[in-house]
Image 1: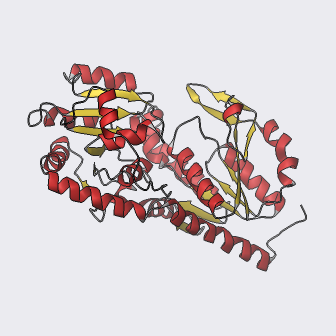
Image 2: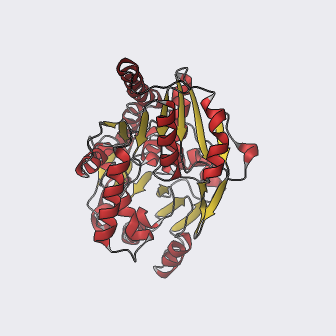
Image 3: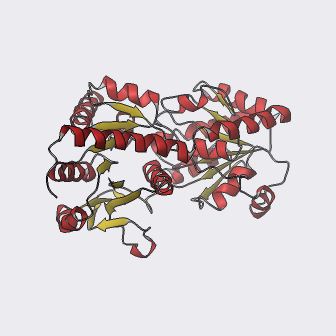
Amino acid sequence: MRILMVSDTYFPRVSGVASSIRSFRAGLARMGHEVHLLIPAYGVRDSVEPGIFQVSSRRIPFYPEERLMTPSGCLRIAAHLASRRYDVIHIQTPFMAHFWGCYLARRWGIPAVLSYHTYFEAYVGHYYPWIPNVLARYAIRGLSRIQCHGVHTVVVPSAAMAEVVAGYGVRTPIEVIPTGIDMPSPPGGRRAAFRALHGITPERPVLLYAGRLAPEKNLPFLLQVVARLRSALPDILLLFAGDGPIRASLESQSRRYGLSDSVRFLGYLDRDGALRDAYQAADLFVFSSLTETQGMVLLEALAARLPIVAIPALGVADLLASRQGSRGSAADPDSFGAECLAILRDPALRARLATEAGQLAARWSREAMSQRLIEVYETLVDWAQAAHCGIQER
């Protein structure tokens, strides 16, 4: 099968959407399918992966990491794409990619799938606080409903997001297919080397957060947790692996709370190198976001056999439901800190959770999730062919 994915964002812009696209492209390719990706140009053509088409783009004011595909760039590549005769289009984001993906699907007479990755209602208050909450919710729900009704199937990463989308009044079929994880066997990483590199003693208890440092991640909460843990574990250390718009604010807060010796900011780490080492070097993965539709870093931590403490909100609840390899906490620093302390003080419990983490991650493998996605594609293609769903000569 030949699939065209269309997205407004991809690497080098680090995000969960980009990670999801890369995971599914790799999984589908291993199954023998051809998956191309259309994205805005980021000016780094030398590092573009095979099968990716970049079109001219423009920067978005106040968001230097983002790009928006230009209509002229999309039109210029239309004939080239049409010659490849795709079987299905998979739209990954709701901006220019959605408009263009729907247009191509109609023009070519092929099914369109939409991935609804992001809980936009929870984000708008962080990035556009001047918009009244009621107005923002009304606009987001209305636009989401229109876009979901413009495709044949909507894919969401968690049961919680399926409920959210259905609650918007969406009648399009909704499929829950989380992004899969590439399982290392055995788990990679160099615990001792990473600790030595960063001057962390072997016995020091280490918490790790990995991901964007952004307002919606609820990261000041983790600083409050560390402040409480220091009374029981004076040498506790929290590592932030990632970067983003609130890094400077978090650094300032950590100094203000007197946590400079207990918190370190590592910046972005290579996913297949230093980040894997960081997972191995840590004793516990901590995650406080209330807006995640899935949380890819949680799966990465589980695959590295790193126990998790997180708040079971939205998509994260799916991973925490079994309590395998993880513990859920109420959204207050005292409860969260108590869960962390119980695991850090009990080596036997931590070892058991580490074993369970690997077992749970295996159920979310890239291969398993890619198989579920290809079944959705195949069902749509078979239906379109049987129903002669407006398929035209291309």
